[in-house]
Length: 139
Image (cartoon, rainbow, N blue to C red; front, side):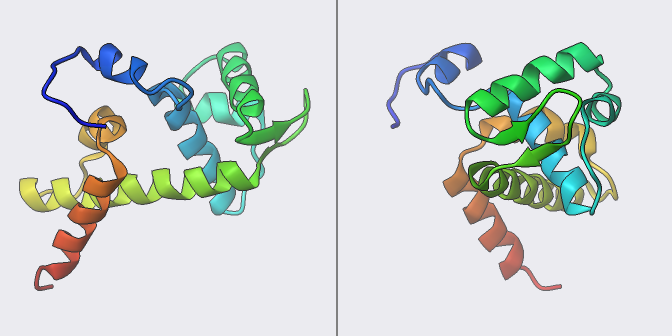
């Protein structure tokens, strides 16, 4: 839904209740990335990878569990549900597409910080249009 009204970033987030917050996306993206690499995900590993405390990671994983993105038992492994795997794959793809774009624009090898700061605010259609644009460029 688009209109010509201006909001704060929190205001735009409030217009889409029930969706993942930027922080939730960061957690889900990291879980998916770590599992995709063939690793087992636990709370302490997740906390270490995201530079947060284990209680913070546990709290967020429980929110993701309540929303149906992960399954998790205390002191066990974190696993992606089908819903979590699907969303996680998109989050990883979004990250990679934006990283390609910003490296191209800035003539650099690494734009991790830039991508991490803005990736949550770009919708799916725009991501797919950026991918199409990047794929159309000569290699």
